[in-house]
Image 1 (tube, one colour):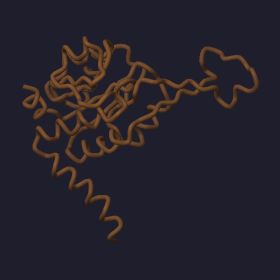
Image 2: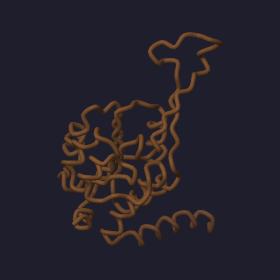
Image 3: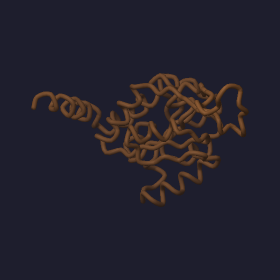
Length: 194
């Protein structure tokens, strides 16, 4: 049962495109491109992505609940690095063609077992890591092959709060969601009460 799996989770990892974003990738000319200058192997492009605020708040809830978090993505984007720093995520792996190898690295550095890792994915590149982790989560609009291996499916689509759904599912299974929400509220209201 997926709730039993969720009780064991200590680390939650997310794919980026299609999970923490809606999958849209904006490639914009950089300011140094100039008027009609050549694009050389994509170096003169800026990649932009839109992240949902609910997922960001969810990462804060996860941290308060004692969960470590991370992003594992095939693409390389400064936008991802900035978002991960902003959210104080524990693990950020970009350019990850082999996500199962990334899992090995995280397991070695953290000392946790595969059963204590959740992964949220949407496409076939996520299958190798999803097949190994303790709790495989598919977003609502994931590919059918991903849904078939998932232990849980979020009610929300990727980029529309699916990351938050996954975090709340785990925290609820661990019996900490209400306490964590109250701690989140307290941390933000005590600033104004001083």
